[in-house]
Image (cartoon, rainbow, N blue to C red):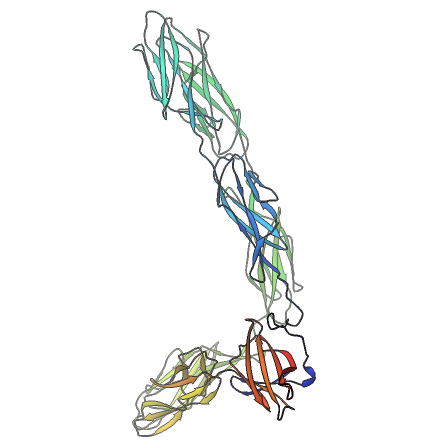
Amino acid sequence: MQFRKISKGITVICVALSAFVNPVRSMAVGPLPPGGTPTPVLTGIIVAGPSNVEELTTAQYTCSGKYSDSTTAPITALWEINTDDASIDSSGLLSVGNISSDQNVTITASVGGYSESLDLVIESVAPVLTGISIVGPSTVNEEATAKYACNASYSDGTTLSVVPLWTVLSPSADIDASGNLIAGTIDSDELIRIDASFNGKTNSFNVTIIDSPVVLESLTISGSVSMDENTSIQLSCIGQYSDGTSPLVDPSWSVTPSYATIDANGLLRAGDVTADVGVTVSASLDGVVGNHSVLIKYLAPLLERIEIAGPSSVPEQDAASYTCTAYYDDGTSKAIEPDWSENSSYADVNSAGTLSTYDVQADQSLTLTASYEGKSDSVTVDILEAAPVLVSISIEGETEVDENTVSSYSCRASYSDGSSAVVDPVWSVTHDWALIDATGNLSVGEVSKDELVRIWASYGELDASVRITLKDVSLPVLLESLSISGVSELMEGAAASLTCLASYSDGSAKTVTPVWSVDSALASISADGVFEAGNVESNIVVEVMASFGDLDARHTISVAMVSTQIIYPLSGFEGKTVMAEILDYESGDWSSYGPSEGPEELMLEDLGTNKWYWISISESNTTSGAWEEIQANWFHM
C-alpha cells in the first residue's frame, strides 16, 4: 500500500489490486487484525487487604491479575513478608505473633514476572494490669528501716516493678513514697499492715515490728560484674542484720575511679574507655561498707568510611601526594595508609599515595582509589596538558566610530600551539575625546571635526594598539516605529514569510531583521521571519512580536485547522455501481461510502491517526442487484 501527500492534513492511499484479499467477514464480530485474535495478557497484579492488623490475630490478603483487555481476576501468587514476627501462607492468610511495639511491615505478592507490595502496620496491643504484689521483709526491728517494692502483673504474663501509693495502718511505723518503711519504738512485737495502690489495684502485706535492737553487720552489693562502655546496670544492696534478716537497703553509693558514675538508686553508668578497666562500687550504711568490682569493657569503634584528600588535577610529568582518613562510628577519625590504585596508563601511584604523571597530548582523567579494611573511596584526578605560551595579541573592532556613540572592541591572544582566544586585557585610550572601559566598550564624546585616537590593550606582558578615527557626524537618525507586514491567515502546517519595517526620524524607512517571537507553542518563527503553523485541534490566533532597537511591533495570524482526508484510488469500475464500508478496529464502528457510479477514487474523511481500519469494496451485480465484495484489506493511519 502506498501513500501520497496532496496537502496538509490530506493523505492519498494507492493500493495495488494484487495486494487485496477476500476474507469471510462477520458483520457482528468483524474481521480479525493481522496475526489472529488477541489473547488477554497479564499486565500487572493488585494486592488487597487490611492496612492495620493487631498482634496475635490473622488477616486475609488477596491477589488479582490485571489483563490487557482491562479485566481483572483472582490469581494465585507467591507471598512473602519482611518480618519474623508474622507469617503468610500460600492463600494470603497473615498470622501475627506477639510483638512489643507497633511494626511497619511489607507484604509482597509475585506472579508471572510481576510483583506488588502492600505496606501495613502490625499493632501492639497494650497489656492490661491484672494485679500488684508487695515484696519485702516480713519482720523489721524497731527503730530500723526496710525497703519494700511493688511488682505489677499484666495480662501478657509480664511483670514490671512500679512505684505505687504506699500507706501503713499503724502509728508505730511510717512508709515514704519510695517504699522505705521506718519502724518506731515499741514495747513489744507489733503486727502492722502495709498497703500499696497502683492504677486501681491494691494489695496488703503484713509486717511484724520486732521489739529488740537489730544491728547491721555487713552489706552485700548484687548485680552484674561486667558492662560495656557507655551502658548502664542496676545494682542493689542487701544488709545482713544481727537478727539473721537480709533485707534490701538504701545505702549511700560511690564508685572509684571516675570511669563510671552511680546515682542514689544504685544505677551505674559507664563512660568512654580506651581499654578494659575495673572500677570499685562502694555502698555505705550505718558505718558499714560493702564493695563490688565491675569490669568496664572497651568496645572498638566501627569503621564507617574512608575519604581521600589531595589535588583534583596534576600537571603532566609532575607528581602530587594524596592522604586518606578513616572515620569511625564513635565520631573519631585517623590518618591511615590504604592500598592505592589508579586506572590510567598516563600515571602511577605508589604505596605512600604519591601520584606520578606522564606526558599527555591532551587533558586526561583518571580514577584514584584507596581501599582499607573493606572500605574504599575514589576521586577523579585530571592530568593537565602543559599550557601553550602566549605569542602575540591583537585588537579587533571598528577603525571608524561616530561621535556620541559606543563601539565594542575585543582582544585576541595567539599561542605557541597555533590556537587563539579572546582575552580580557587592560584597556586604555590616548585622548580625552573617548573613554574605554574594562570590557572594551569605547565611548566617544562630541567632536567638532574628525579626530584620531589610539586604543591600547595590555595582556600577559604584551601590548597591542589600533588607530581609531572619531567621526564628526550630524544629528543622529532615531528609530521611531516598527511595523510587521505579511499574511494574517494561514492553514495549519503552512509557512509564510513576514517582514519588519523600521521608520526613522529623518523620514526614511527600511526593512530590518528584528528578534522574532510568537505567543503560542503551536507555531514558530525563524530568525529571518519565516512563520510556520503547527498542527492544531481547532482554529487559533497567534500573536507575532518583532523586537528591534528599543521598540516592539505585533501582528496576529489566524491559523485554521484542516480536516483529515484520505483519497482512496479506484480503477476499472467505469459504468459500475460500487460502495465502500470502513471498520474502525479500535471502536468496532462501521461507516459506509457510496453507492457511487463509476468512481475513480473515494474521499474518506475524519479518520483518526495511528489506527487500524478495514476497507471492503463491493460491486452491485447488474443482473441480480446483489452486492458482491470484490476487494478488501487492512490499512493503518
